[in-house]
Amino acid sequence: MTVPEMTSGEAFAAVERSVEVPADAATAFTLFTDRIADWWPMATHSVHGEGGTVGFEEGRLVERHGDRAECWGEVRHWDPPHGFAVTWHPGRDADEATEVAVSFAEEEPGRTRVRLVHSGWERRDAAARESYATGWVAVLGRYVDATG
Amino acid sequence: MSNQTERVLDALGDASRRRILELLSTGARPVGAMADELPIGRPAVSKHLRVLEDVGLVRHESRGTRNVYALAPEGPQVARRWIEQTWGDVLGAFAAYVDEQRTDPARRGGGRTEEER
Image 1 (cartoon, each protein chain N blue to C red):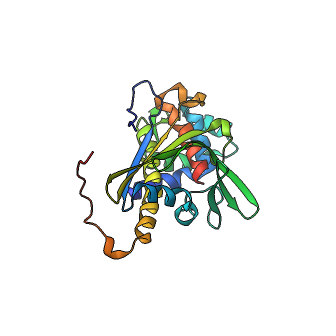
Image 2 (cartoon, rainbow over the protein chains, first blue to last red; image 1 turned 120 degrees about the vertical axis):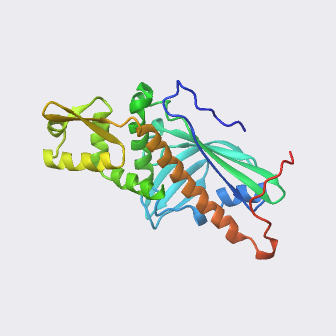
Image 3 (cartoon, chains in turn green, purple; image 1 turned 45 degrees about the horizontal axis):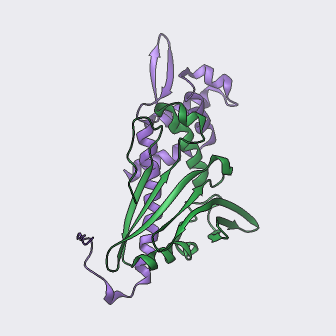
């Protein structure tokens, strides 16, 4: 998997973070996806906050809170144990989606680097396209809504 | 930094402040002009601007007798740091969870990476 480089023409470059976990890639992939409800910090990183749950359901990542359902994104790529990608639009319409890709690279037996790349900020957003100097406001707006 | 991130988060947690940022993203303005365009009074706008300026998202310059506000040039970096921190929190929660799933004796020496590819 290549690391996106920041280019001068891009309104807002991809954000990338990674962490190493003590598991083989297959285990890490399974824990990340099948067991996402067990570890995702819902209280701080969800549309409806604490008390809800999140899971992959038929190609979509869905938050459920009481009788409310919130689609965070659609699966675009699914390649266990190497990685997956989803569109990303919690609390927003699908046509405002950005993209989140997560890859799992076993760097040595039993240790896996989990890398998350959040990209696509510039794509469908007129404000973000306008300029690097002001586009971040739209980016933040989307992000704040996503993590309300 | 995490303290600063928290302050930015707080600053952005308010819909009026996000609206102010959106207004400023279309051009610099004095306080009065913003108050005219928002459903809040001038004192409230000033208060929100102070909060935004404190966390480095907005700056002002004096033109004659009035202050004109604009997005801070550091805004993109501030936004970026904040988003990075937020995803860092998510991945940190995942790493802690994976750690919990392991039985203790299997623990390996931490942190060293060796090229084995």
